[in-house]
Image 1: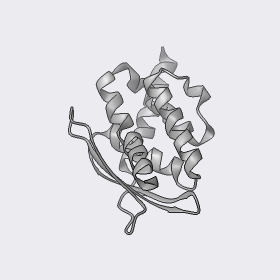
Image 2 (image 1 turned 135 degrees about the horizontal axis):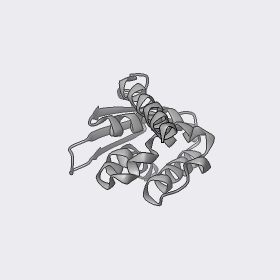
Image 3 (image 1 turned 135 degrees about the vertical axis):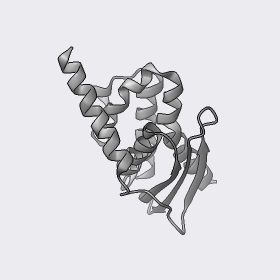
Image 4 (image 1 turned 90 degrees about the horizontal axis):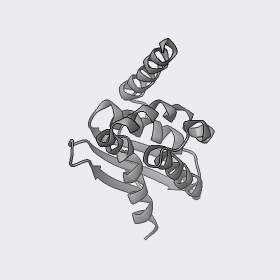
Length: 148
């Protein structure tokens, strides 16, 4: 049990570090991808913008407000997707959503999503899963809109 408590403390610190980080906060202007997402249950809100160059996510930023989970998850997402080609970015989104929505195994996450294991405990709280996936769902909307 003591190990579980230590792990929870570590995960809490990881989430708080990402929540406080301003590394990828803001907006890309101009942007090739722009999407807005809101969680009507709690009011968390995100705007995702990105510059897409040569089939890659050259730069990805998020802006908005919400709980530690939604903001930290968006920050981790921006870090993971920036630099990836679009197909890889979509695959990373699918892997994270599988973890959160289908009780996937965090140990099986791609290396780019390693930090996201800290969100695994969120699955115990179904309403919070929507917070954790808000940015990921929003960026997928942006990918779909950008290709049309």
